[in-house]
Length: 358
Image (tube, rainbow, N blue to C red; front, top):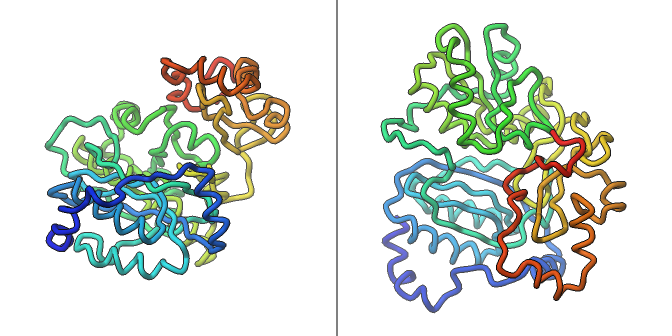
């Protein structure tokens, strides 16, 4: 087990680099110099981790050496990882995972669209949970989850009249892409969605099939266990999420029932699953499904912006932010000094400055 092999290494950890020390610009330069292709992928596993901090440091030390980049959360309940790996080191990466008992043979969700700059640093954090669900009820057993469906079976169940399909993602994710006919809760966070969906579907706990999906499957693992605990009798989930669904659809020539883009939490912002553009620019209302963050570092609001508005407004969400980014850097820093980021950063795609907000 990795804990035993890591004792000596961890004892001397203070001599080693345990955190990212490069800026995004420095990392971009190194990636360009390396000139090698990278693979963006994700995986998760629920497992009782005895010491998340030791696991966290072990992962960082080894993945940093492999030039792995990404965002990884470790908790007592398991691991949730989105990352990119140099293509020449992919087999080394898989062999490393196989050396950890609870990750041996784990499925890796390979991204639909690749980008060498999908991640620009390696961040491995210890969290209370690998998915922030807001649940306080310790009686919910995450192993008592719903029935997992492949793409073919998901399509079949989706077409049945007694099925209610629910998108377990946030509003800004489903805004740019979702399954046909799905219920898309208007929520900002996963923790908001659970009680809302339970309330909305309370009268259908026994007479309907509850069919859920999310990006890669991890939110549905928690959600399906939650809804079964709450008395829903027929709970199903898309195995591997939208990412695995797209791979199976393309590989097996199945009908693609997902319309639009799959939102992703990295530099890509999204990956196209179908040719449809179902959302609009939040500033001018033209068809668009590209998310950006406001260029004003004190704002950083996530919103949808077309190329025309991006050029005209200099990647900003409003005129105030546009004025701010054109001030001298030192003046911008003075304005930010001692101030927290605007709360717009937590209201993704929601702001009074966005004329065509969702």
